[in-house]
Length: 555
Image (cartoon, rainbow, N blue to C red):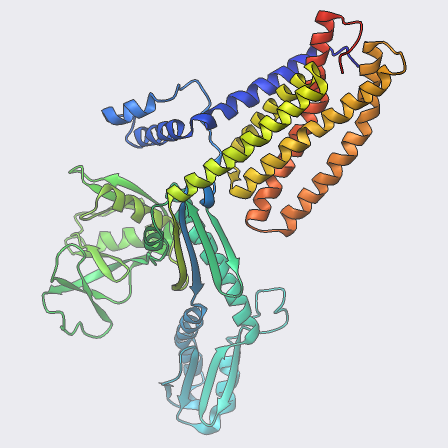
């Protein structure tokens, strides 16, 4: 047991050294974070950074690892939002989109149903009147043919619309099964779009999860305020490219049928009259990136998918010399004149943007439009001062735990206690190294998990050292006592840590939020504790024993 092959020693020492190197940047969190931000800024500018950025890059050696453990909302500060998704808007949009289909279906049986006319109704319900009441059954059959099966596990065998008759009117609305499926799709799509927007903005480890039937919890560490987060998430970012009919300074001008009167984003008091039907929409975008135009002003470059690129190219080829409005959320960003055929499905959006505004616009366009509006029910900002207080309190707790445990181990086991304390320090470094590598988030409960791990980490060493004491009483030599002590303590160590790991796994899979953060740190701590107790401490004892060759052990 005391003889450890050279290859095992190299692996153990290598893993410990690697873990310490990866964990070290967390001791200089602010400097390394500033360094990382500056590196990203320099790369975004093509390698030409400002003197301030160069100074920030120099704050940390490039040859050293620069990964950091992400700090949670309670440690770093940030923004907290609880939003309610207006799923009813989706019902209304779905039913409005059904009207052209219903109209065309009834036109095919015009001889039986006569004229077709849409009637006023509540949102989410389509009422269609026919002029020949005797043809109501033919109308019902024609509209029912538009129904499609519900795409969900709970809606198998059911259709997406319910079609009923009220006198000489056909009433169309979404079925209950389709409403449930639509709710789920809307929430999932909203979650994904919010996640893509927030992540693309460079924030660290946001918590974005569904709560209840139609609510979403959003927590983003490191962001300035809830209003800043709301401005990013709450923007619908619906982009369209519309033909321009004209422009006017009259806010009450009649745009005419199938046209829209939209304000200019850059020119106050100016309005554009554009065709209601866009040539191409933001749904056809595959990419959008911040860029600079030919005058070195901030802009946004974009690229369409093949279908959108073909429509965009055909329109620009046929309308050279005509203005073309780029519309974002019912505001005209710009209306450039088409100078030539724009082939390849790509282009650039110019306007009075700052660099930050062009970056945010690119983020919104890449993420896509939210499927429904959101109402923010709760908003809260956790200041960085409160987060720093939590970090300081966690540090104090961890330091006190380490000092007390360290004193106890040295007082109880002498030099062997020093070995255990050394392994404990390596164990903590390995925890931070693993959290850094997996991109984990450290929260206040996570710090509690580290403090608990400190106590558990020496427990395995205590079991080994006590077994060695017992073996020394049987008049065996030191080498044999150490060997038997490790052998007999191994099963107890494995059993204790496996049962605790199962508990941590249950907390992770069945818990949420802070509970999962605690479980992650606890689970990692169990693995590193077993490694440090079985391999690191034993290696230290083996090296010491081979050097000193003691005749007895002071335990």
